[in-house]
Length: 432
Image (cartoon, rainbow, N blue to C red):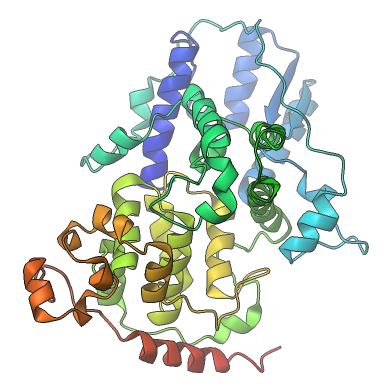
């Protein structure tokens, strides 16, 4: 796991342990040996777990299940994290979908509805701590160099907090979700992704809570859009299941010959640090590093900027997000970077290159999001905050901004970089 995910997991386990009155058992070692020992110590006749869908975990769990059955154990696994199983949603020819809309509309929605969440059990018997159980601190999940100050202030990492976040979203923000989700300075996004990833709330709970809210709000389109976003989460896991090469290999092989730029270390570092000279990009990258999260609209902009304007391989973006996102998920991270790079399933066309200036002017018109994360530009008037290098000298002076000194000059020209990207893409067009 990346650093931000490890940080979240520590606090999630800490919260879980509190809910179990300090009786959370933590073990390290070969899982088959650990499970066998636990079964023996507790006189268990069956072992059950919720499935994982990452390729290496599927292989691991299959071997464990077979071995435990050979020992005479009753073993069963369940779907605890997805709305539909990946192998249940196939085209008529029994092959996997590669385009989201038919996958979701014709595939998923034609199946039985997702199972309804069950109430929390009231008769869970917490065993005493095993003598072999580790202390949470022994997992060494927290950073040795503190960088998580703002993250601690931003997030409440618990199952209760997940339920409260969903309630607040459904009651206060869902009605304007369809349009409001595009504006990074607004609250119209769920911010549930990390809770979903770590199992602190289920997609089924979110699905039915939003569906039930449809009768209470006056915007069915927003409810449908939110449910389809849960569908995109499903699609990512579906793609990883059917195409296990997703994290590293281009799903569209013609991109294997794409001419990525060389000697990009300086540009990559500027992008990572939010020092590109393009305020929306910089605001997004700084939000990511300080909070472990980035608004989805801005994720698309910074991703496009990296792979298209800078011609830096999407692997570099995927790796940075993996380390910085509290909601880092192998399926979603891989599928999303392949989508923005144009090389994945149902990907954004490569020629769709997000202009960070016009995106900023459209979705952060007054510059509130930029001011929050790029305080050097806090005094810039809205007219010039999206491209401060174009502001008259007197405007820059009044805002105490010195381009190239306390705020960087643009690291490349948007128009020229767009033309360079399209020329690079043209080299792949005739490849089968």
